[in-house]
Length: 157
Image 1 (cartoon, rainbow, N blue to C red):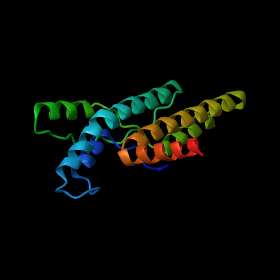
Image 2: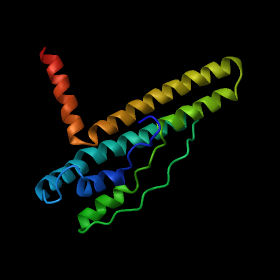
Image 3: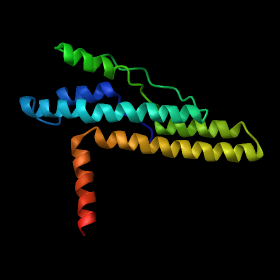
Image 4: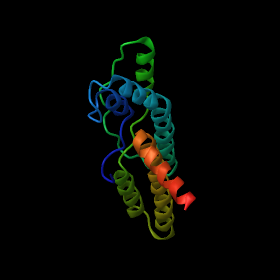
């Protein structure tokens, strides 16, 4: 998880319609998952990824991004509009790439500047990990349901 780039938004829709998470003939279940993806997973991803990239940019990091996956095509006008919006969500770098860039930035500085750059980089990496974690959590309904159930069980005990 540390070395892989976060899931692109295109892959979220592809997973909801073509993924091996349920039988191909479970059309109603796949439609429910598709609506979940459009209503919750993609908006959360569309907020978390650009926010993480903004934090990285403000810290002076410019990690390279993976090439964008091929665009999807939808059957209806509404479906294609959703897919076009999804294609505009930036794909952030892997967390390890962010940390390596922090280390490279620290290596170019000396003394107090290096310590300050390290603390800024560590905070940037932590915020990025938090935002990636939020996106990861809501990208699949099962993950969100499991974490919610565990949190509720902890509160009740």
